[in-house]
Length: 428
Image (cartoon, rainbow, N blue to C red; front, side, top):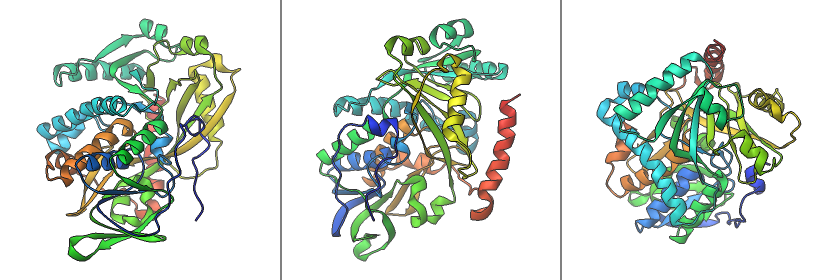
């Protein structure tokens, strides 16, 4: 199989130089084998190696090839599941523990960037913008809950008049501003984590797909690849929607949803600042949402169109540009330099899905659009669990997850019908 290079994205075009690691040939042994070279896998490898474990990481394409290197780059507080729903699922104590981990995830991200000098254009600030009057009410309630119940003091409400001084659009009625969240260049961040992991001795093999795994002698796991194998004491599956047939039981719990991003031509610093004055990442509150931010070289990065059907029949770049112009009609004259897409892994309840397939086989998946920060802390929790301190990992493992209905044949059509309801709700 030939090397699978990155998709033609703004991130790939502006990525720092990185070596092409070799494919695995022959047999290697290690303490832990990690499958998946995104943020979750690289973070897990880094934190495991820091504990003195011998780690091998297998990536089917290149480091950061999947969602970790293509996303909107927004690092957000919380998880995709509302705290009230999470409390119903696992109780108030565990729900609070999940919340605390999500806040720690942002601190960990900034710490890793500083500690390993990862050049990834980190910028603080996030706006969650109301499109409908009901969104305003929901934001006011959320801010009260976050400040009063969780002591999260970095959020405040931004009324419409002030918001217009921050965003050059009339589309939004108000917003929640969080100074603790922010945005970055996701591919350069992932590449930086991989380099940090290698600094602790992690062996990374690219162009190496894990084809199967099975128990081996002395309680080990044998992971077969196209031209070799890994024999490990522990196995970590962090490939999300790209695991394929490697773990069918996990595939039933997540759905790959296509999402798309465009990058404008460079606007110049003055015009870019006029669009988003304080360089905050922005996301609206519709179910089929828009999200956007400025890049370090003064482009507008705008994402939003999602495709639940799995079909590629519509013009995603044109549809995404049209959504961009609904927010910023003053960009009608602006050229789009890059347009790309990828799949985000969602769970049925939108909560992350961690757990074990066997006592020595762990998995991390289902970040549902909150992956930039949560994947990093997931790797740290995984390393804690492998080292014998599994309390925080097991809190996440207790979140119940149902299979997507409909089996392999009908699950996507069933999801499309469900999403039509939410799309109609966006219009009301």
